[in-house]
Amino acid sequence: MPRLHRNIWLGAGVMLFALALVFAAIPFGISTPKSVRSLVLSPILWPTIIGWCLFLGGALLVAQQLIGRTRPEESGEAGGPRPDAWLRLGALALLMAGYYIAIPLFGMVWASALAFLLLALLIRTRYRVTSLIVAFGLPLVTYAFFYHVAGVPIPQGEFVRLP
Image (cartoon, one colour):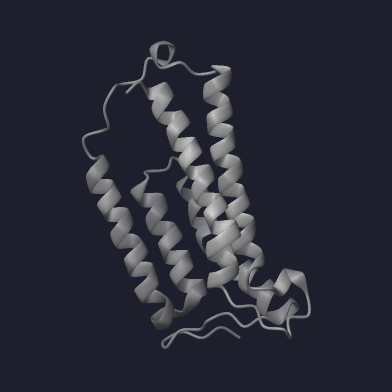
């Protein structure tokens, strides 16, 4: 199957998956307490936003292929995946499992910082210093906002606790 057709089917599949998330999985799978004061603090807000972003990404992929901005014969890309693609995908799966296990031990802030830093190393980014700053700065700033400004508790770890 040509790359053009694969991308259209991939985009359509992502759009269908996003619609299933927004209209079925999120409303029926996430419970919302009646005592939530603000829509911004509702547990269904961010999963719904992510679902609509997935839908938009799939729609943009389909539109890009239908408009014809990138044709496989013009792009000059290699036909197959890189030799280490499966190894890196397996490493990403291990990283996600390790992140899930690390949250109760170290807390969401430090586990997120470590996971972001390891992901930057895994994808071999050229921006190592920026990745290091973002890996620790973003979780700390997010924690400060949600815990101290919005009053939403962030999971703390068994070994490390933030003020």
